[in-house]
Amino acid sequence: MRILITNDDGVYARGLWALAEALQPLGEVIVVAPDREQSGVGTSVTLHHPVRASAVTPQIPGIETYAVEGTPADSVILGLRTLTRDVDMLFSGINEGANLGNDALISGTVGGALQGFFHGLPSTALSVTTLEVSHFEVAANLGLLLGDMVLRKLIPRDILLNVNVPNKPISEIDAMEITKLGRRSYVDIIDEGHDGKRKYYWIVRGKPTWDVVEGTDIWAVRNGRISITPLHDDLTNRAQTSILQDQRAPMMDALRQGTSQSSR
Ligand code: MN
Image (cartoon, rainbow, N blue to C red):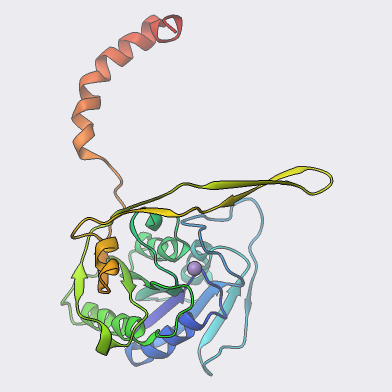
C-alpha cells in the first residue's frame, strides 16, 4: 500500500507533516508537494515551461520527499507518472484554511486531490477551517480513518472527498455532517498602484458573502462540525440542458442566416 501526499501550502507546511505522520500505519507514505505556497491555483497544470523536482530532506525520517517547482496538480502528475510508482491512494493537505463551497474550484488543495481522482485513485482533500491551525490531529486521524475505510471497502475506491475540520480538539467537536458544496461568493477588491514603470493591480479577496443553507459544507463549518463533501468531476448542469436543447435548432438557423450579427 503506497500513499501519495501533496498540498498547496508547500512541502514544508506543518499540516502536510501532521498528515504524513498519521497515515504511516496505512502503508508507505511518499510526499510530492510544491516547493512554495500555491494556494488558490486550483487545478492548474504548468505547460509553458519545464517543471523541476528535487529530492529533499523529509521532516519525518524515511519518508521519500520531493519538492516540485510547480502546482499541486504538477506534483501529483510527476509523483504518479515518474517520481514513484504503484500509488494506491492520494491525500492533499492538511490545508491551513477552509476550502468551502465555490472555493473548491480555485482551491489548490482540492486541485491536487482532483488530479489524483483523474488518475483513478481514491483522493481526499483535507483542510482545517482556520488560517493559523493549532489542531491538525482530528483531520489527520480522519485521513487515516478514511484511508482504512477504502481498504476495507466500506466506501468505494472512486471517491473524491473534500473534508473540512474545525480547529478544535475532538472533545470540542459535536458532530460530523455529510454535506454538499455551499455558495460562498467574494466581492474581489482591486488595489491599483504604480511601481514607477508600470501600473499594477492587486486582486484582494474581499469579505465573503456566505450562503448558510442547511446541509451545505458552509453550514456545517459555521456550526463547528466536521464537513465531508463527496465530489465528482462532472460540472454539467442537467437542469439547463433541456432549456438549451429547445434553443438548439433556432441557434443553428440564426447562425446559418447570419441574423445573429446583423440584428445587433
Ligand atoms: Mn493552502
